[in-house]
Image 1 (cartoon, one colour):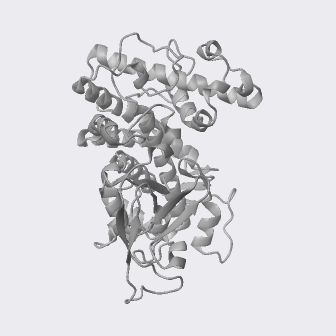
Image 2 (cartoon, rainbow, N blue to C red; image 1 turned 30 degrees about the horizontal axis):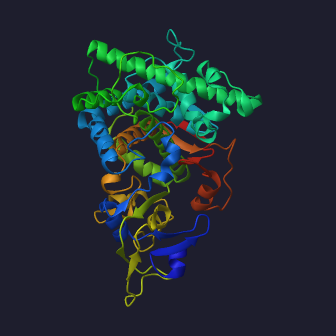
Image 3 (tube, rainbow, N blue to C red; image 1 turned 90 degrees about the horizontal axis):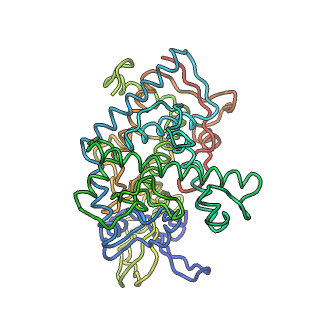
Length: 467
């Protein structure tokens, strides 16, 4: 760990391409100062340009534009809406259990396929008020069902990011959802074609849902209704259909000629509300399968609350907008048991324009604040004085994750429901535990990740055995 090598909980590097200076922070106090000082340390929005492919949104804007998006999106995460998320998630998990028809044992080559299905249904129902079955037929005027379009849009997000539209043929071909040019051949051509159709279908479905809510003056407790209602209350008439889902596809006509007013944030919530929770639940199930003692502790707590038959990013960039300083603690040297009492922190100069990276892996594994930082010790969060400022899974400050409670509500209910009925273990058909291997070594072998927009487990092979 570089912080241990240099002796301080921050270090600076000079990058050559492009030439710039970047400071990496692993000091919770300095991080808190950065995240709570919106006007001294701003988000470098150019680094989020890939997520702007749908248009400006609450994640990729700063200043007054961010304030406008924040004002629109905040009402979507009220207590009433979160109560609806809890009810929808419980109902979806119960439907899943019913479909398993009391099977004694279920084996999964990759449990992420299961968690993907569950979170897809939750975001469809709680996000869009869509309650039809997963395998339902596509609606009139569509070539995909809503779930097919939603799943294909999420699965092909990287294709849309990687391949710019000018590779996709002429405007006429795009309008007819045909693909030619460099991206129109072979496997890649088929993938781009599917991506085009999926994005087009999602835009149509969301537009039709908004049309229906407005026509019937229908109020629901889902995310889409909250966004529409917030924009209507703001009386923003300058927002047209392109901002409904923030797509950069001007050749696709809107499903209705009537101007619609909502924000470009729907797609960001769609992606963020699905993939991050999917991955978190998969990692949690994998860790509990490896650490059977911890699983039994959690099971005991779950049984005190519910009965089985009755259910209820790794780095954050910032940029300094003025010449300033940050106080940084000295680090725990490699091999040391505790920080030298005579070791003093320093006040680091932060010139205007300097990039600042909140190094989440470093602060989450900082031995100054965490005992056995690499160990799986969920009970550490039950201690009254656990270091809250050194734990930032949802970032911190005004720019912290809006959907935090949505994701936490969904994940806790899914995990509690599964653990109340099933014992989780590794699947020996796809993963063999070695004799004498420590849980940490098992975890390192089984829970390998792919690094994309989020950290995603490559494969989590598990077995659910009915309790």
